[in-house]
Image (cartoon, rainbow, N blue to C red; front, top):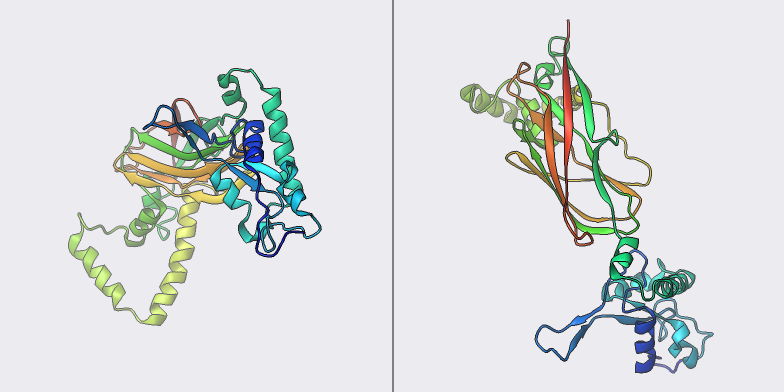
Length: 337
């Protein structure tokens, strides 16, 4: 057993052996970060970031500590796994309960097997083996969305259906069908159509419709004053009525969105600037899909609604070049009776 207050650290020779056996690549299968590179300041030096992490802790109180092991066992190469700094820190959080011994041993075993299998192969082949493949689609999983836009204004006056008559909601999802994760993904959408809004902005617009601060300035601000002077009970009733009304209004724009299988249910928020929409996805694992917050395209009138295209650009550090593409929204208008 380890002596009190003494950590059973690895010898330098074992640290070096672990790093070399891992090819200086993090053994976490969802990371595979390269941990060594040239120094920019000195041509004879390197920058080395890798960590020889203990599978079972080097001292009592540490992550996955096993009191039945001897000091030699804890210092042995069998008890070590090579990781990047971030993963080495992550596996020890909460005393290692999220990363049990068997899982770390499997990481190490699988990684060394992968390195051995790809010995003397082109680096391009290795990149391809772990490369993400990101593709952007509508919620129907296609790059073209055919929308039958029904004119409902007269049938849903109380729910302000006339406003929905000039709005097209765009629902998108991003999928990684490659063999490796993607991180820090930047997605930019460019619309060739009219003004864009988020759901929060649409809710504000719906709430005050048909008033607006430009065309009905006096009435708009008079309504704001009236609402601010309501009693607490009046506000409570108004909130309940508005929630129901806006729910119906949302239904006029399209069906309720459902997250796909193998998806993180958290919707990625959007930032809108002019005719562009921006998304930032911190990480997307392989075979996973994330829903993107809806973008609402607002046309001046029912008559001006038309089909439109969306140009997109996807950038992530794991891909050699940006992914460019085009999505099409085909709108077929149908006037209600």
